[in-house]
Amino acid sequence: MVRTAEDVTALMGNMKGVTMKLGQIMSVMTGTVPPEFAGSLATLQSRATPMAPSLVRKVFGEEFGKSPDRLFRRFEWEPFAAASIGQVHRAELDDGTPVAVKVQYPGAAEAVTADLANVGLLFGLAGFAARGLDPGPLVDDLKSGILGELDYGRELASQARFAGLFRGHPFVKVPEVFPARSTRRVLVQEYIAGQRFATASTWDPIRKNELAEKVFRFTFGTMHRHGLFQADPHAGNYLLMDDGRVAFVDYGCVVEFEPQLRDQLNRMITGVVLGDIEQWRAGMVEVGYVPPGLDLETAELWEHMRLYYSFILEDGVRFTPELASSMVRQNLQLSGETGRVNRKLNIPKGVIFTQRINFGFAGLMASLEAAGTWHSIIREYTLGEPPATALGRASAEHTPGMWV
Image (cartoon, rainbow, N blue to C red; front, top):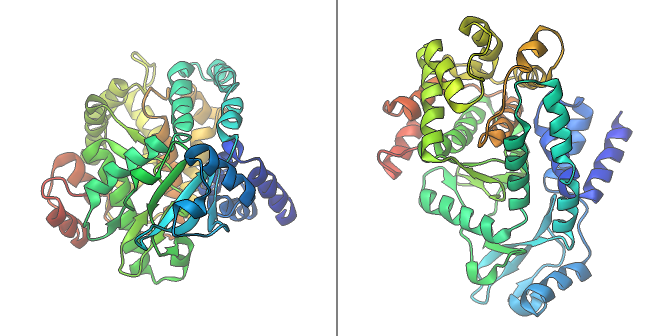
């Protein structure tokens, strides 16, 4: 099993593009693959096979007309991270500022476009199996999201927005970007020194819970407060800084809700935290998860769906591998009673990447077995209640009225 996992990981790492991104997603969605595979696939988050220096030089020649060692005072040819469509090098600007330089693999755009060519057909077939599913908006969202990751100019703009929201924040750090040194295929940002997320596995439970709350507040606070979220929740995108802050370092996949959709989602989740399942059902219809006139009683639908909300139904719920894997397994099932209900439901336009957030985040938190006041924190976001924790109060002091 271990040898097979290593072989599959090596293959995905060499293929890169959408294939490698699938491996990254599977590594954090607890329950999709055996533990041996998840552990091996986790290396795809930042330690994939790098490209040769000659190819790095080629990209810089095409983007800037010169080699990177002529653009920076110092440039390390050996990357310190490599992922699905690019790799990252340490460098220094002329004034000595340390930076991280993200370089896209040559041919990445063509490869990803080819990978996505048959996505519409695949989801069309899924639509035959799941009669409630409208594949059109789903395919459009998926394609635009993944293809958007190829445009480092778009990523730079997204990262700059997050940096503006969190500049000076007590427990969130977003690296600053350098537009003058960046292009569509090269992104230069502030270098962040920190430990990998996996190091937290050795921490005591109190520190783990505090880390989990910081990630929870960043992930769901930006979603509910700003309609904006980083939709790639894997451990390779988080760095643990010595001063206690968490650095969130990748903004290739960022989704923004239109204000109307954000408000609809907030009303839906408000029904959950208030225990008003009729309001929740109305929200599910309003957003588009539930087709109008669906032949399921609200109580039956809630019994089917409550697992996905279990961690916000009350305070003190602990994320466990069993909870995370149950969420994924139930969501993917198309047979039996669970499958009968799943086939009636839809994934509407604009929310496909929230699925990735929910299951990826649950898997990440399960790796810490973290517990917290998730219910009270969500009430802050949806009902405007005062901060429930010390971290919430610290965040509120940073951004009064719009804390995360």
